[in-house]
Length: 124
Image (tube, rainbow, N blue to C red):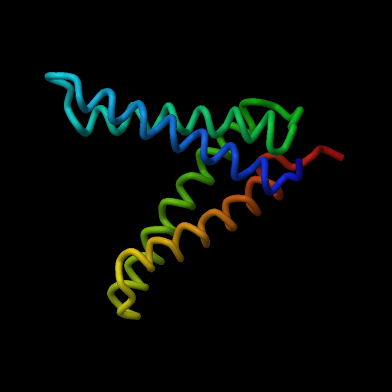
């Protein structure tokens, strides 16, 4: 199985983790939607980090070093996706759904590149 396929597979699992947990928590009486979303996002992020570390990139690097780089990468992704989505919808006039598809494909490619080149880079 090649690295690109493993990357996508881990992304699917982490996304399903987020969706499943957020839906389950949001369905519970008295659970705040924002809290449910944040908890589910963090759980999905943990699954993503673990999966990419062990499955996608098979890293043996330092957990703390890779961990903070992974969090920074998520910040970069959030910023890039927000800026690109707004630009495509508000400046270019693209519909929301096509803009979301383009944005997600772009962020996925950027994320893969950053994770491979910086976060989980093999030590020489």
